[in-house]
Image (tube, rainbow, N blue to C red; front, side, top):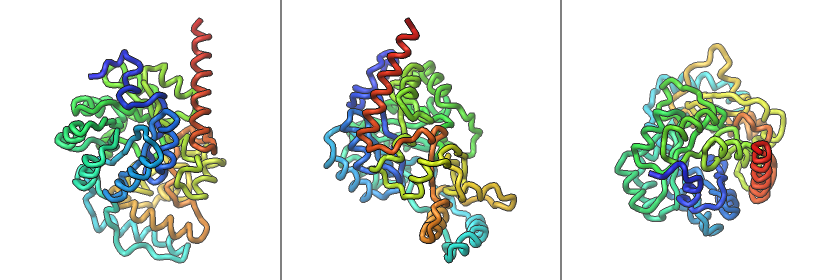
Length: 366
């Protein structure tokens, strides 16, 4: 176990210099973004949960061409979806008028558009062959033998949790550090069981609870957008802060123009949880898709990620007609603090703000 009292243990473990981690953000992060953050001394990340093994191998190679520093590869560990044809057809029928509005028809059927890491031997093979420095898990943990294999390959492991029970499982599994995902975070909730009661712990409450109860290093995540937020997380005992939404508006990300405009406009002031887009609870800016759930006649969405098949199709149909409001515009609660800066510049700004915030805390403390 790592000694939590050693405030630099996580940085040494991950081979980084600064306590700033760029969240993986599948569908948003790119090799250019991850490399810029890693080159600046933080930990860049790539979300490959929605990719196949070949896609993951490609982005790992592309990132290594841009940086010699460690970076993180993130995978989804949800239970594979169980198809329900009746639920799926009801959902497609209900969405049909929205497709028709943009001159399109819904898909005839839906499929599980990507494979969970818990059932993806090909992805594991890529990791064991290419040996990324760090692999992180979202939505749960892979089987014990997979964790052993990754650790034997010299790969450091991180796992996101939303409560103390999940953290206990992570600690028992031999993972190296815990990512404390607060309710403020953008994107999908990392809950291991999406049907279980959600304590909805905030980032700071969860971070403090984990620091007091576990010996593993804790990484605070959710609603942290600037150096002051990073300083606050460190003051509560986290050894690093993970920022996702803060990096979304960087030019290195792969988001479309509609997402970028929303992130830098009034929409960023309003976020909500939705299952309509993907079938699993995620925090998004309020848009046309999130508003669909407000309809009294809205049926149950299909299972995750089967519902995403419909969501992506509707977004594509609307976007072709100039409407971007059906996209997965994931964003945390403090999205209005986002800045459109190149990642290296944003990182330098975060460092400067962090130093200033720590100085202010020291002055207040006498």
